[in-house]
Length: 380
Image 1 (cartoon, rainbow, N blue to C red):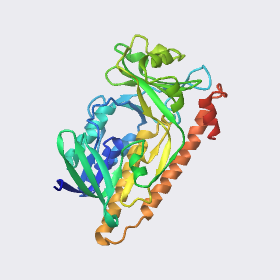
Image 2: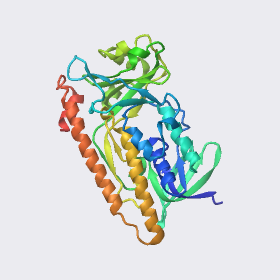
Image 3: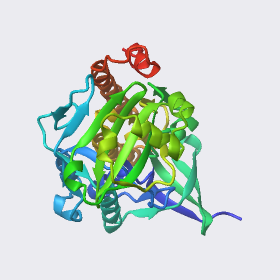
Image 4: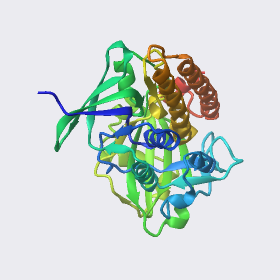
C-alpha cells in the first residue's frame, strides 16, 4: 500500500534559526511551497546567544523588525569578563569585536517568533518528525520517508533539499558529502535559577583553565547557563555528564563558582553537546545545500554561530530560488557554478575563522603542557 505523499518545492530539515530563516527567505521572496521538518517537539531548553546588533539588519532582510518579537527577546548585554591568559580580568563588549553593541537573545522567544512567521507566510512545519531522504532518479529531486509518533507514515517529494540539521552533518555524509573536522570539542553544561542575582549576572564570564574553558551567561527569567568546554576524551575521563563530577569541576573554577553562589541547579544531569568545528563540502550533491552548523560549525569561543546561521540561510535561499527557476525553463540542465561559489565562500569563511580562533587560543600560555592547550597550539 502506497504511503500518502506530499509534494513541495523545498524541504528544509531542521527548524533552528538557520532552517527557519531559510524558510522565511524563500516564503518572502518567492512563491515556492516550503515544508520544514523538525525532529524535536521544541521543548528543549535553549542556550542564549550573545550576538552583535547587526542581527537586526539580517532580520530586516527577512521583513522582520524588533517589534515583531515579544518583549524580553533581546536583552542588553553589558559585555564580557574574560579571565584568559592571566588571572586579571579583562572587560570587553565581545571576544573579537568591541566596536558594535551586542545583545543577549532569549532563544526560545526568538525561535518561536520565527516559526510563527513561517506559518503566517504560508509555510508548513512538521514537528516531532523523523525523516530519511533519498535522491530521486536522474537527480530529479528528493523523496523523504517521514514518521511521526502519533501519525501514520507519509512521504514528501521535493525538488530541493536544504539541510539545516545541525552540527553532526549526518545527512551530508550519508549522501556522499565530505566533512572536514578541525577538533573534538564538546560542551558539558547546566542551567540554573538565580532569583535576586540579576545585577551581578549581567556580564558573560569566560574563564580558561588547565583542561579547557568555562562560559557563563544570563538567560531570561533570572536563569543562567554554565558550560565547560573541553575535548571529548577529557569530558569522558572526568565523567562530566554526571551531576556530582560536573559540580566538582565547577568548584575548581576560580571565578564562575562565585557567580553561581545561592543559585539553584535546574538540570538533573548535565547536558553534553558536540561543539567541534568543521566545514562540509556538499557541492557534488545534486539539488542539496547545507546551511548553518550543517555547513560550517564554529568553536563557541568565536560567537559566530547565529550570525552565520542566518546569513548562510539567506544566501542559500537565493541560490535555491535561482537554481529552481533555471530548472523550470531548462529541466535537463542544472548549473552547479552557483553552488560551487557558495562552497568556496564557506571554505574562505572557515579559513578566516581558523585564523581568528588560533589567535585567541594563542593568547593563553599558562598550561603549555596540558593536552587541551597542546592540541590548540598544534593546529597552528
